[in-house]
Length: 124
Image (cartoon, rainbow, N blue to C red; front, side, top):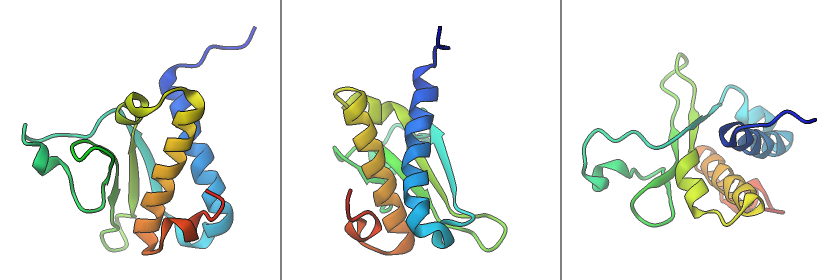
């Protein structure tokens, strides 16, 4: 009998798959970049306008799907955070979720490297 996996663990696997796919092509550029998953974006206030930043991937104009935190010198590496719950809400099933996660990770890597998403993953 297979071990059951939580939705969070399955989501982590989708992010890991997307990152591993991109690292094959962009290994040197992504060296040291941290990838993380959080349940939902952190909100300091109730104002959604303060929630969204220029580097966020936003589908509906209100809730970020991911966030790029640029490196801060040599001590703090760049970090890409993918938000699980907003992506799950938008997906129509596991396959759709996998595609959406992949697209969001590609877009954030493109933002980080200053390139077009089509250049980061032409087959995307």
